[in-house]
Amino acid sequence: MIRDARVLRAGFVPREIEHRNAELNHLSSVFEPIKSGEPTDTALVTGPSGVGKTCLSKFVSERLREEVLDVETTYINCWRNYTRFRVLYQILEDLGETIDIHRQSTPHDELIARIESYDGPRRIIILDEADQLEDPSILYDLHSLDRFAIICIANRETELMSHVDDRLRSRLQSSEHVCLEKYHDEQLIDILQARVRWGLEPDVISNDQLATIANSAAGDARLAIGTLRSAASAATRENRDRIVDELLQQAATDAQDQLHQRSLDSLTPHQQSVYAIVREHEPLSPGSIYDRYTDRVDEPRTKRTVRTYLQKMVQYNLLVADGSSRNREYALVDSSVVSTPP
Image (tube, rainbow, N blue to C red):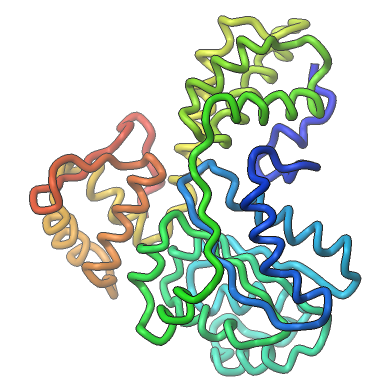
């Protein structure tokens, strides 16, 4: 049943981007100056989870590499690489400049100096989940370097801006902003049909079944594709020659659980502490969460940072917020799925 499993995996960049022509043209135009050797603006790509921010950014950078010989791309997931050192190290690793770097002792200034001295091909740096950066000054470090073009990906512009100082905020606000909205069901069906054409044998799933998947995904392409993948995997395990309706509901649940667990596994140590506190004592107000958090960890982050952690977990369907901003309380979305204790 499965001809090419790659197209059903998270992170796969398709040959064509469905229903993002305006955004594709906008982001491509930002990097048009690279073709003539000119510097480019920073691009800020925002939108809720599952709307194709990462896919669009990778697609544009790959298409530019096909047109321009001396262009490379570095992709950094800032949820995993959330410190300034880790981001700098990842960039230098792609440049082949990390042989004599010591993670514990090499100062940041030396890493910056090495990046500043880089004179190789122009490079697009994709900073995914940029609002996860604990020290956003890295954006300022990279912003003025002509050899690098920057794409910052975040769920919301306001959350990224809340972390930065006035100097960097001004630069980011003047950058090119590409905003993606949630998909409609019809758009998700088109996306799923394309994945079926590339990845599955003919006639293994109907359009009505794809509509069912799209409806259950509520505008989230990651969840829709994950459901299709789970359904195809289940049908294959059961030696079926097509996907039957009975498999779809369980596939949707499995895909949701996988996304949920992936988000839990991606939490930083401080975020894991915050999540564990909510899990143990839900529901809790932000103030109560912060008081418990400062008692639990060494070198606690600021109250504003912890509020950002909570907002991020709500966006990724790990927590639910109930009540107004003054009386808000946080609880787990699904207490049956737990994170690894910090």
